Image 1 (cartoon, rainbow, N blue to C red):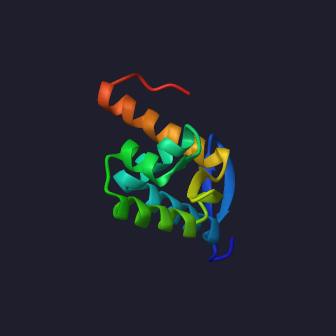
Image 2: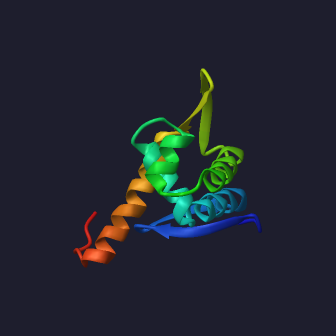
Image 3: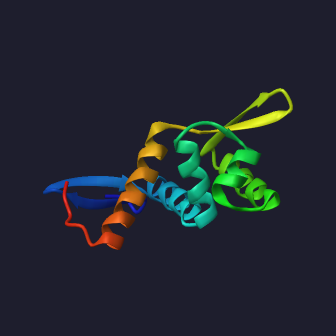
Length: 118
């Protein structure tokens, strides 16, 4: 094993994860560790939206939402397209959508003290 790899045990199977992959995951999870950004991504997981819609959904001011969206766009977690004068935001892929859903499900289990399951 090189210094750029880490060996982990997943259900009895050894798996090697390289440092770049871990660093990228940490960066993505760090972006999700913000209430407004998580709320934005959750709303986008339900469908495409413009900034006005996202401001309403997240109960946040337009400048704040725009700054958060810029960070998500730079991290390639959301994409944009123009629709006339409006910029429409989309969540980048299903992996991110599922990650957000799972994070919120874990939160539900903690809040409601639900039993764990797989």
